[in-house]
Image (tube, rainbow, N blue to C red; front, side, top):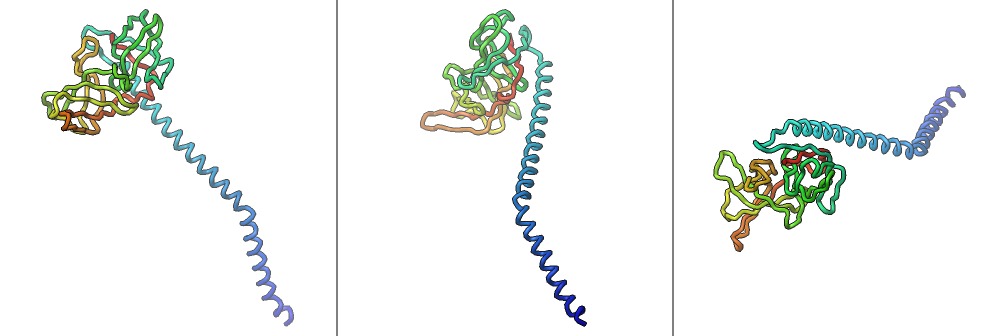
Length: 233
């Protein structure tokens, strides 16, 4: 009888002891579990970054293949070059081909997807290229809007403002243009041919007091991911 009477309390105390032990274990190891969770989160972030990098590299490879198949306009030849240095504060890059390869100042430089910039200075075995997005006031080219269905293109002067922003200024304040329209080079130049892709219109801005209209353009070429270019001679 004494044994039977003592047995239930002993079980209760045993259960309390186990619960207290597990609670104490949890307190002692909570920090370790938190560190483990953070480590797993960091691994997940690394995996996501790796996946994005692989996708970007695959896109770059596809663009390089596309560039290798570029057909120049009649009477023009192309010279392939690699970017060997970048001057971000000057919005310029240096390529590994120069006057010895027939490169001259003013020639357009293409990357997969469209026009990248223009040759600004030349040495025998290298050349400086000013990016299309450079805000240099001398960095202007003729460009036009192509629309669907086709109509008379709206022509203007294109200049850069930042790495992902171009501005096309129209002489006609009523120039037909809408977000989504494709912008290409106008061809009103002996050096830069017509219909080289520039970018897409993202916004149209009107300044009625000045009789002015302009379009904000997102460039076609991803300027930060261009390992190779083509100079159009």
